[in-house]
Amino acid sequence: MSEFDVVVVGSLNLDLVVRSARHPSPGETLTGSDYAEIAGGKGLNQAVCAARSGARVAMVGAVGDDHAGEYLRGIVQTEGIDDTLLATRPGVPTGRALITVDDSGENSIIIVAGANATVEVDRLPTSNVVLAQLETTTDVVEEAFRRGRAHGATTILNPAPAATLPDSLLDHCDVLVPNEHEVDLLGGRGALVSRVGHLVVTLGAAGAELVGIDGSISVPPSRVEPVDTTGAGDAFCGSLAARLAAGDDVADALRYAAAAGALATTVRGAVPSQPSRRDVLDLLDA
Ligand code: RIB
Image (tube, rainbow, N blue to C red):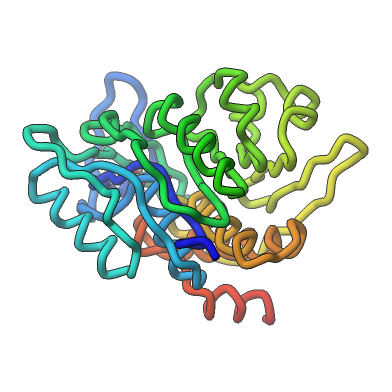
């Protein structure tokens, strides 16, 4: 048996969040409201969602030796996520994300990598799934996927923030979970579908699609009232990883993940919005 259901290799950020009626134009100053400092980072958000979905999770990442790093490690521990391979880097700041959320709940984000840029994978515990994003280096993701596959793990990549990828990384990816913008940057559905085992495209409020060579299966959205979309894609990926690690087939795992992503839009903030298994099952039963 594997040591963990899901190993997440990824970022931890302190999110500096402000609400504003709309996003500013270049050179424009707006007055915002509701400033808050909230736990986030695509890696941490996905790890938290996987844990709240019932998975045994380990986090591979790095924080600085500052208050933000201590705070984020505390969240990891409180969520029951193993932090043995979460490094603390002396003299390096913890990652930050500057986030604006407008009245429709849409966000814009600028990240400053800090310690996330120093993540290394010298060893990886065994797991059913290795889950990664692109807020660490692509070399680190590829190394994690190589090691994970050597243990028999399924590798899942959420290629966010959008970036071009080396072929060698795609070659080590079993499940790719981009949004439409990321699909375009990576060469389109046709180019991707033959490169990875499963291509899952997230469509925001329109749900998701499992794209195959011969056609697609649509996963409809759940009806919710969004207040903040930050972390919704992470809820999708974290819960998808947890359900695949538990042995669900891809179609069942996708229905669960789409509901988790929808629920995450109903709560403000990234980590605070990651839903529990109970909440997801209640929404699916509604
Ligand atoms: O996906 C949302 C996350 O992106 C935020 O929590 C922020 O930290 C950035 O990494």
